[in-house]
Length: 264
Image 1: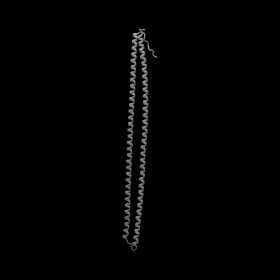
Image 2: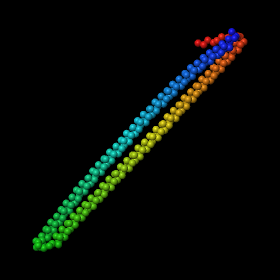
Image 3: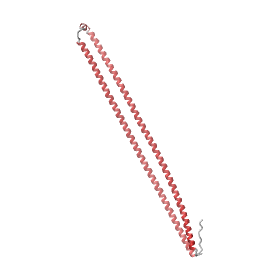
Image 4: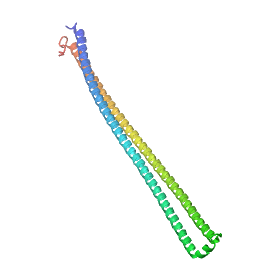
């Protein structure tokens, strides 16, 4: 029995090492499976968060575009209404000026007719005597009437020119005002877009930093678990070696008294 003890000891040691190796393999596989499941869950959660953030940004961008489009439409509508109002005021001004000119011309002609009538009544005798003669007074009256009408027409023309200049100035001022309003609105939209893009960059940086932290925590936990498993396996190997040494010592002292362990 003592002659077979070294062979039995080798078989026993090999059986113990195989059993430990198999146990360690199962533990390592279980740990890797658990870590893989955690990593898969982490990646799935991160992807879900990224999808949600992307959808949120798209919705926010759509709302911002709708607001900007509404502001553009409101500005265009306001400009159209102001243009119509300006044209209506211009038409009213021209109509009022035309009526004023007609009224003034009728008043002047009525006054001239009245003056001519009074002149003819006052100078009826002289006119009767000098029908064939030229009348300086009549020429003077006609000249004054023509001069008055010419002055009135000149005044009317100056009024028209002044009104045209006034309308041109008002139109130019309105166009400049609309241009300034549109430029201010475009600048506002540009600033809003820049602020939105900056917010997206900040959120992306925050998400990336969180993902990095989670990955580092996951890797640190995995390293800790692997180190603990290695320590456990080393401790078990040390205990197995110590037990083997004890068996070997007992077998040397008491040959044939040791038995092979029963591995189920």
